Amino acid sequence: MKVGIVGGTGEIGEGMAMRLSRIYEVLVGSRDEHKALETCECCLKAADEKGMPCSVQGLTNQEVVEGADVIILAIPYKHLDGTIAGLHGFEGKIVISPINPMEKKDCFLYVPPAEGSAALHLQTLLPESSRICVAFNNIAGNRWRDIDEELEYSVAVCGDDAEAKATVMDIIDRISLLKSYDAGPLVMSSIIESITPLVLNIARCNRMKDVGIRFV
Image 1 (cartoon, rainbow, N blue to C red):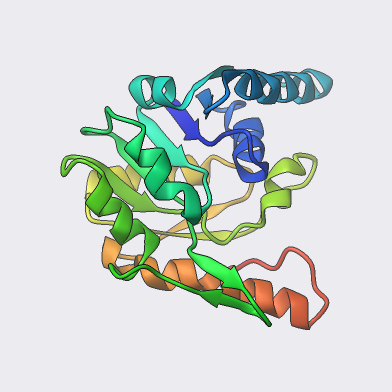
Image 2 (cartoon, one colour; image 1 turned 120 degrees about the horizontal axis):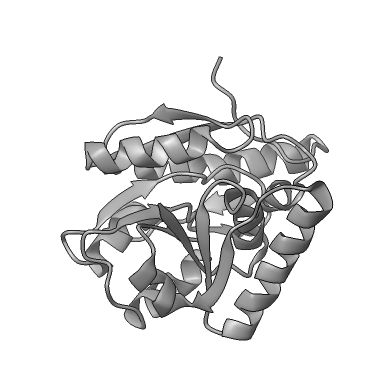
């Protein structure tokens, strides 16, 4: 299975590529293909130092959409509309949204669009046959890149396509010590997304670092 990362050169995207490329064939996408290639070099170097396998390829975002079976949108919410408008070929693809619409004022606030969540807004932008799942929303970006450390978090997953959700949950359960949990249909996405500003505020107010969630 090929896993593609649209926006794979940011902190979260690069960290995901480092971890996923040891398990799957990963396609790293960027508007600038040279940046995607630089991310791939980082992945290959990190894997070589650990004597671990790595399968990664740097491409444009459009080439990632065309070539991947599962597509992760590792982009900020403010770039969502513009990014999707410039891409095509999502028909039938599993699309993972870890996107959290929020802003920072005196504290971090969840600021969803009119549809109620970033994922529900994404649903209006993609072809009807796209299979959208929400996952990975509540993991700190720098934790992805710290590949010497295990990720001991729970990952809530929601979506309307049962088969797609099962595929996404299987991917999650293969990464470090992550544990996936079925959180129901896509309408639950607003609750999952809103957890991120919550944990950021907890971290900030209590002088904590990399706060996440675990279900026990």
